[in-house]
Image (tube, rainbow, N blue to C red; front, side, top):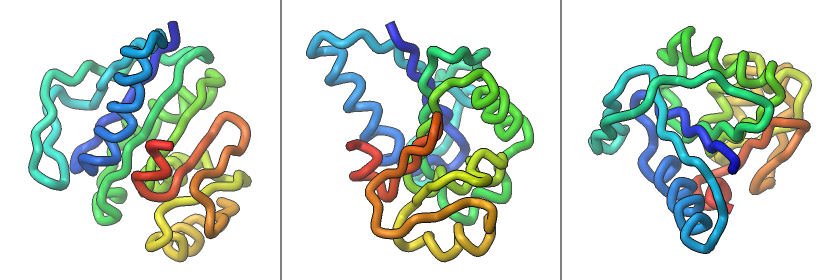
Length: 162
């Protein structure tokens, strides 16, 4: 069984979370064996659209067998992502776990230094900002998703579902 950990940050974009969540849920109904965890720094998070997600689990210790998914948040919310979340992502990366961002989740990975020297992408409307703000990231345009080692980044929500 593979553990899939969704890191649900404040102001999470609803479709960035629920689209991929639905995919794993459907895979389980079809016979896959994913152990899905919705986790956050606090037990309740309000999305950018006003939907409240509750009963989130605390951030777990991550192993190399885990998959971490980081749904996007509004671009303006990236600067307020806590140091605790950044440190947790760095620890997850250091264990060898796979980490995937959806849309603007790439900015959080870049803030954590996880995109330094890596090929990556984000939503087409934020490519220039990612390139400008994080020059050590190798930002690619016109890509639905980019896999570089243990890190995968996706463009918009539809590619995050893919």
